Length: 175
Image (cartoon, rainbow, N blue to C red; front, side, top):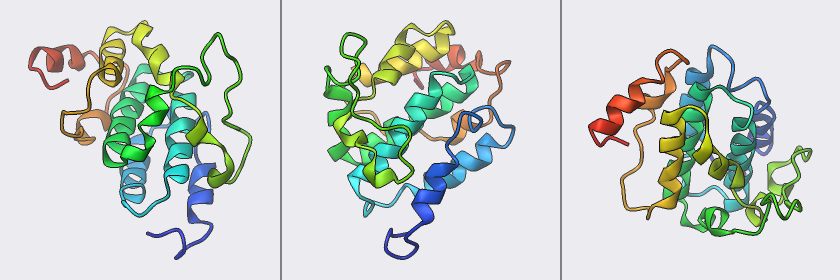
């Protein structure tokens, strides 16, 4: 899909990213489709930045199984679109010391959120997550982006009870 083909498609898709999306039982199906919709290399960086920033913000209130989806999803988008890498390397925007995050979470149009001027500080907070597999996975953003993208199927169908499998994946060097 290109933005010009369906001008309000991405605005409507962006509206689905509410607090509930990471808690719903059909989140795996939803994220399979979102991965497809956001995979085009022709999408503007500002649009993609809004989606990953919104997901990062929502992950602050998500269960561990929801955060486990957001981290590799974001990694894959950053890997595919290097113009977004500034969001993980920008130390000042949105930090706890500097509460002036330029991202506008109330903006309905993903092209107008100023997410590209922000940072992904939300994902950095997951490095201290209470659930060890989430904390370990969140440290992927501290490393050089040389690993191949994640296979999202490995992360989509987990519940709180099955997130413990990531300790086994760590042992096998999958994460």
